[in-house]
Length: 358
Image 1 (cartoon, helix red, strand yellow):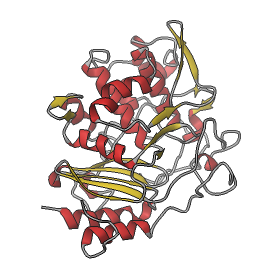
Image 2 (cartoon, rainbow, N blue to C red; image 1 turned 60 degrees about the vertical axis):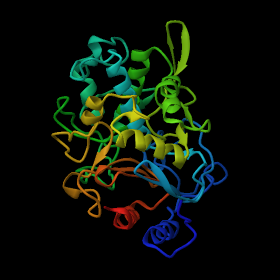
Image 3 (cartoon, rainbow, N blue to C red; image 1 turned 90 degrees about the vertical axis):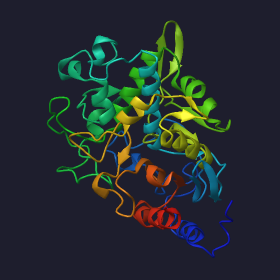
């Protein structure tokens, strides 16, 4: 394995670059709640607060894997930190598990036809399909555990087209499947639907079908908001969010993020065993017609629109705070990096790719 402290080659220089461009969020959001940290601070009242637990963070950390071999680690790669919306990709993988088990045979089926009574029963919500939620084109309207979808209307993102309004203002809703919007409330509604579909806590399903086969450590956690509990078949179960917008979510190490990235690179296989079907993995990487830079809860480098330094076939799990899991099939490359300034990610990934490309 390359020593990331030896700066004599291009990969080691990329590591130094990452270390020099740590995001400016405070390290401890608990003792320094007024400091810049998280996504909730930009929300309108009363939703500009945390609804679930958070914890201190580490510094820039990362893991580089090529051809299935770890060739570089830096920072604190074994430290479990909140990963924000990288967790959305984990929801997409769980949807793949459900699909392969026959629980979700048709992504284009309205969810209400399978799961009445959980928020898809009225108006245009009756038309919302699994594919709509996975591609962020659902236009689902309502509240999920007390947080309304309007909170994320007109949301601005570093890697998406600029919105045409002010965040949190009410936007006229379109028919499901006709408008793309990145919306964490709707992602939480998807997670709730998957919870009901499995009838089991999603972290338990994730542990059995993804974490254990992939050889993840025992340090990862996936927790819900303090009040996000439901009862299914007499069991009181937590509904977990697909990110850490309002706290909670997935805490995981860069090493474990990279292991999941390797699963994705291998089209759902681990050591020759199919964990998730290649058909589902291909669907995850298929561009949304309304947003060709987005698949099933992963970002696609379509036409090199997101990162000009990387091939167009590359794709990512990405989360606020500078969290990335890069999958680059052409060079058999997986890179997990934490707490990197998002506006420096293109330069960092470009340096790594140039150092390792075939």
